[in-house]
Image (cartoon, rainbow over all chains, first blue to last red; front, side):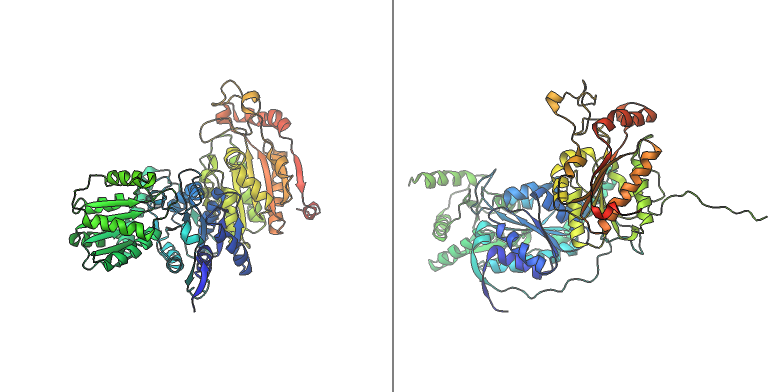
Length: 374
Length: 256
């Protein structure tokens, strides 16, 4: 197949179609709406299910229902919409049925705005819904990567009967880039033995997230944790660039990671030994690789489009072995390559210790940036 | 002489052989049985998927010998939609109480009906929250004492009971909307016939069908089972009139 110029949201939707999604249930919200619009035409054309639900609450519960049939099902939304979905997300996790949720993140909290953000890191990576559960979280950084990883998301969901979040920001949903779509997968002819399909010639299947006896719930919690440990062992994905002899390790995901990669390339041209680790699975986080790189580098710079959420995970793993600095843009602001190049230059020249919370120094720099003070 | 025995009454095939957790005098058991009998008579057990609610009937899936899922509070019509759209040949029904359907799940039920979702809804209206211990429901009668309206439901402060059958019957997507009662044998027979027609509507692809069943909760009304049946007949029926609110013309001519 050849590369085509594709709009992010359309490409992600078609990637899901080709991965065998049999139902899409959603509700319009900027900047993810084109995903739903695309599905509203494409799925009926293939004889597959599409419903524009009355709310995100309803949409995710439609997803929950279809997930119980063992068929590939998904929704796509954007930050405030995903907040509404958290109830159903928890039920899906508790019932151990596979589903894929795409979050095209925008500025928040509250109504916020419709500009690109990574402010839902905690919500998506740490759970968001109630109770003990562990979603798999993929964070692609280009239209092509998202196309590839949406396909993987369905495979992982089926493999572990798990919830998989694909998080991108508004940039990626809205931008057009050349990408190559995979061939169309054939739909499976059988259903998983746990699914509901009518109890014909077998015992009835009951799918529920209720374990009224706390001992049974605890057994379930332990099963979910053990499954998560398997996922941690097997499914870590990351990208890295120029890390071999790096003294400054930049860490960023999604758009922030991609912009930082450009900045790292420019820094190299100036002779600064910078490299970048770009986690693609935010959960499971590439902890082992980060530890290996920590042994070799002098300083770490975490770059995000939020107030330092992945930063907490990096700090937990690095445990003070090397100084960590932070640079974030918030509120729907996307950092530019020159901006991050300046940060890399600054970090490369900085010998000072960093305070326990690297955000403290960053806040001072942000105040200057926002007031135009030199 | 050879002694012969004839079985004249037994558990429906669609029932599991377990005791329910329902209180003495509660009509959930009657409603469950009517559904199971209808499913048996129509030969639907092996293709039926039930959706249980949150409320006293949260464990309904334990009592039906058929595929079942357990929805979040109020979301059963959404979950049923998700299932029915990918398995249109299967029979899908929800079983919901008044808190579930008429309060927290109001959006889901209204839109499932408006879309003409080809599912069947069995709505248990007993005018009170059961599982959480007798709080005011959206169907609680004016003046009725509950644990969250201890001086009696004051309509100036808390508004009026919601009549779901009447409301849903205004939607073009609905094919069969009726209200029946479980307070005596004659009404139980009528209820069964209505449940049959609701499933017939779905099998014929006519769209959304709902049977509202006036039911009892003697435990939370703090009265005897017999008094609870009288409460339905004397207090509830005047507020929630029994009757057919919408019947597709296809069903009018159907003999069941």
